Length: 486
Image (tube, rainbow, N blue to C red; front, side, top):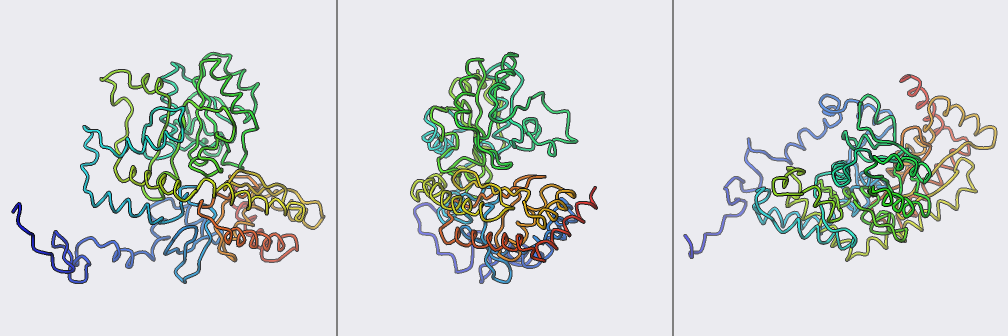
């Protein structure tokens, strides 16, 4: 009764009385730990049977079929206790690394608060607070829409740009990646992702950095916007100096908008909060963020934009739900985002990414003159591309030609594989048919991690240039696989 003291619950008993003396649910009730203990060993079989059957097949083929059981920061561990260095960050999701204690605590707190979430007919504080914090880093922007992913943030920007300008066509750059839902796929510059999913929206590709091509398309008078990654994820190609500013001026002169896709490059990845901030005077009309904003836990995407654009979309009360998301602005995602921004500020994450990125990129670039298979190292902050190319010496050139004849991109895969299998470092090839490895590690990387990666990379390069049997034997395996799939 109100005003009376409640009796203390006995140890091991939850307020609902559902747990036994050892704190675990009784038999028959859902127990996640028990389920994983009993069925976790079936992981690859379950995927092959019920999900994308090509994923386990691919992982078995290249020797990536590991069993990881624990993760923290920029590292994770397998079932034998071996530690691995993560240079992939879940394709950029794990900006603060895995299981950051501040983000974990925020999620425990929001669950324990038992908020009246997603009532649909109230204005909870957490979305407003997170929007406020994001806009502090984007002072020329005014409003935020929260969705659940990067592709949803892009979809929102495409819709808003079309509505705001009254035009139907969006320009995008060759080799861009903006997501895989239908609208985002329509501005995806890679044919391999688009094939078999048409017809798509009538959007148009132009070369990254080609202002003449941009102006030619704008003169047709039907362009709503240009969407661009300031640093393209595929191949790690940066927009040329001055391009974004000049493109913005051209777009505005023709009544069109600039959309910056910062889903992977935003939140400190390139050594500034946004990658477009590396160029003075660039103020996109719409900005898309996601990935690292999640803290690695709760999916979240955000589209930031100017006030007049939002007022064009939500033009009257009867259009209040004209664009919405069922799980957008949910309390868990908002709490995770707020915790991420707090950690970034307190721990100096942006400056750290710039400093460690300069260190790693500089040490790798110094190897270009040492290894003839290594052609270039580029990028910004902790978004780095390592490009391989045709060697000069006859022995290496014959091996290189063998790989290229089977499928372009196999040498980069040959480097990625031993980095994981022998050095326990997870990396990725930057795109299909590309001889480029992309490094997008957690922004909590430290100098010891940089030393570890450079040492391992040098060892793999030494073996490749010395004609080492193991790496080229793996290359022959990849050639057979590539030929078999033709």
